[in-house]
Length: 495
Image 1 (tube, one colour):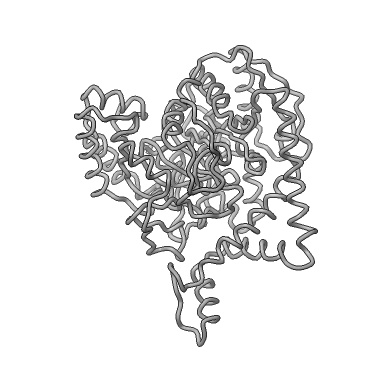
Image 2 (cartoon, rainbow, N blue to C red; image 1 turned 180 degrees about the vertical axis):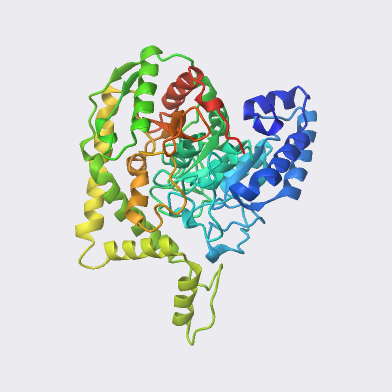
């Protein structure tokens, strides 16, 4: 096995035994970036000099016995998480040259743990997209098939992990933006409960929906990252003042007594047959591991979640993006004859088409005469969705569904049809609306274009596991037990 293919826990064990140095590991990952990045395009910024300096500092910490499981482990950070002195572009021309004067809470936590940052991962502009084709710079490509998308908006983060251009990555999830790219790239992606991880330093898309989370090569790594980045932060008013458990204690390899529900509404029209078969096979495997499976769970309002989301999220985005006026920071177009013309030119040329589309949707939904008909009604539907999840979790410990109704689609296939693109998140959006935690774990492969699922044309399929608010341990237990009983997480793309 190459050094860049190691998981966090494998690398940490070798670092602790002094069989490997952080500098050696970091150099191996940087060499891997040089080898495959031209094809994958997963990074906006590669911070090679900083990474090597941090690796040397990590080696000193390890030698002194000051070590955590993440000390000296190379990582990628999604490019809307603030990193002091390192460009944070949000995939937008609007912030192309922005250097944050402070660290996000999660990067502070990782730096305290001995972070080695390989770079900032590419993304859909301001996290608005499901394919990373909305990046203002270039699209990221799926390591399993460079003609296909990696998902979005955290497509760059997922691709770095799948292509071993990082050992782990951080992403953000507003409507599926961690789980969907994790599924399409064949890695683990975890969206924690809203409020479990501080959003301080996360550039806002939709403030009541956004949540930071890890993308990793296996579930154990996911628990290790969560142990570091979860917890209360007084700088974030929505951060939950709750104790954080040791998530590694949830990694139990059986499911005896666990109640699993399978909501039928998530087997949506148009779902790929191979995706459906993979999900059903995964549920059957969980039953073999001792779980009690209920195939009759119903979440009746699921069909309204997509419409609800595309009123609430653009409305919040419209308010959050109003700060980009060309005056305080970011891109500024000063060719107009007045301040108002300059502001109009700045937004015209600084924002991409998808961002403008969502600003217009949000403005319309909040405008006089339409607020009650759209935004207020969407908030009422949000309450219904949350109540249905609460009722489901009274009879089940976790719910299991697909992450994406299809495997990775081809680059350019849906860019001309925004509605088809939005439907890519139909299985993930309800989780954000309800604020509950969910994970994507690899559960199989689907043939691409009629190829063989055992051959080079196979594309990953992701299994989604959901639980009640702040019950991340239940999710990790189920995900770990399933992972340990299968081999899907061990597959790597051939680049």
